[in-house]
Image 1 (cartoon, rainbow, N blue to C red):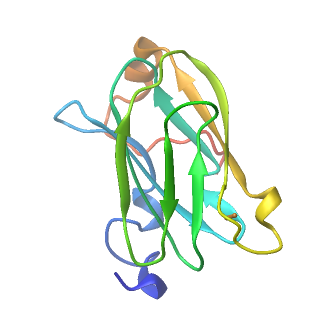
Image 2: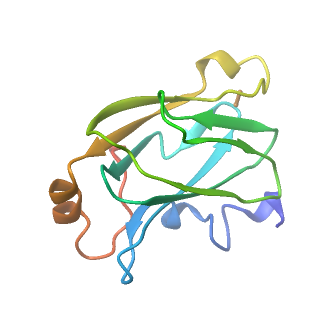
Length: 135
Ligand code: CUA
């Protein structure tokens, strides 16, 4: 993976970031970390359903953990980190970067909105990429 072209082609182009409910019923979240933010800055996921994260970094080693859940990974430029988890309860969680990545590390975080499954499924119709970032 060419990190310089990450935003131009392939899985991690900007239009493919965020959460999608696939035709197969699987929920996939794609996100990119860079100094010093995540894209999207606000991630929407359902509670009580398996959610697969696919994520990478553009510039330095980053990482994230979602609240007190087991959603936790390291992000290395040029590699895709992936894991599947499920969130027990609806609500908002903070998602800080947990690998020291430079002077802005402490301020690098995103939000994760965990929705009730019915609410998520209603919003997810149409296969669009979802996030809670106003664009
Ligand atoms: Cu990104 Cu610390």
